[in-house]
Length: 168
Image (cartoon, one colour):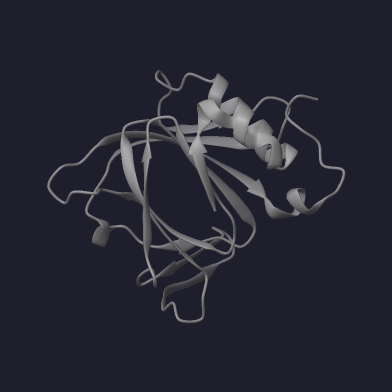
């Protein structure tokens, strides 16, 4: 996993894969304030930006998950949330086995758990070995209204040496 502020990708992005950098550039350049919940195609790609509006909730109501086929690029356009994280490990107890159609496995908990705050204009790039728990709150009595955009990038594209970018 790596995290950052979308406004710093020119400084931070030199080590990103070209596809990830291009997705981050798209997220930085797009004003999501008037987008409704739903899926929106990214220009010149087969990628979809899924826009979600929700209120954060207590962490124990948020399920840890991982994906096998896709890398998640999660961007908080408005609000803030606690994103729990831990590395994939045989010590994690699976609560819902891998669903190939939805590309998700759910876990009982994160072990060991780390937590970061994703505030407005922050992003997280989560790989298949990153078990994560989105949508949480740092305070179980105060919750944030969040607008989040998630773009899923097929892992196989990142592994291809001659991958294209959104700018082509």
